[in-house]
Image (cartoon, chains in turn blue, red):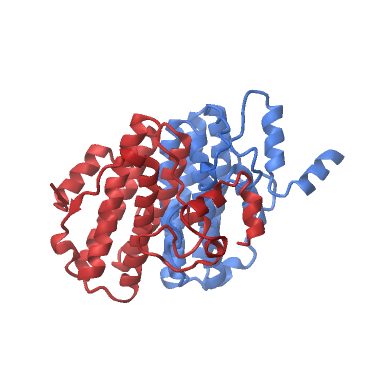
Length: 219
Length: 215
């Protein structure tokens, strides 16, 4: 549709799309981040505009978890590929194998959570990592970005989901956070540069995942 | 991040106001990179350094924040004590310094949120835990892992979604600390695919068992 194409071109971080989606779904979903398109962070939540949060719902939990599932599939596929590369050796290989295992378990966990809520886990989109896993430095750099995205996505989702789903998400996010510090350390970076971690909205998460260039079909 | 970017996301001026409140000029706010022990600025992301904890309204949230404050005071004091006594060197010393600064930032943010409802700073004695590098690292691993489990246990009990957001923003940082100190002690940074919560009772029992809390 012509209108859709225009919206997609203008809507760089998906915030507009998300807002339209909420309105057309009906219901009283007042987005916490509606006034700050693409901008909410943990710090900005303090600000002032006390937008009412919609009551968490199973339906919204499913939506949140479907996006988390895409990231977990992305990770599981990425680390499986990296673990098989000759270029990835030593501790980087241990790292890849460990995360392959963790992300695979996370996929299973999130799928089970979605089913428990009455939803059907979405099939993963197609991934293509090009030659990123063929070099230790490029692999670790991409990993650092991906793991941090998972942390921020889950942090953002926390206040929006039911308590039951929050308990589940909480079991994953600290593991992803450990992954971040580990890989940054492997890269010779400050493992933990900040005292507080940001939160990403669903729109920001989707946008950043798309920007990785690794996801070849829509999600 | 340039001031233009900052203005774009700081729509209601809350970030700028917070910066003014903690005494940072615009220039200092943007350009500051040094870790200030006991201050609010981390060594890296400027936004991440601002106090994210909103004022606690419910009695339940006050109790939770005071529980978190106790643990953060413990950790802050522990890292400071280790830096003074444990003869830390190189990467371990750098980690103790930075993690300690983060914990101090957490203390400051929690005290700000609690206002007059904040508990007084407890007295601590770390004994042999800060006597040398090996003991320091072993204790750091335990404290950080316990802190993660503590925040994880409290998160679903928090009433205010803004306070929950703040708790989550600290919880993931504690997990990063845990991975860092584990790797320094030649342990597995991320030993399990899932991490479970600990209840307040379980955490307090663990803290009491250390003997670090005096009186």
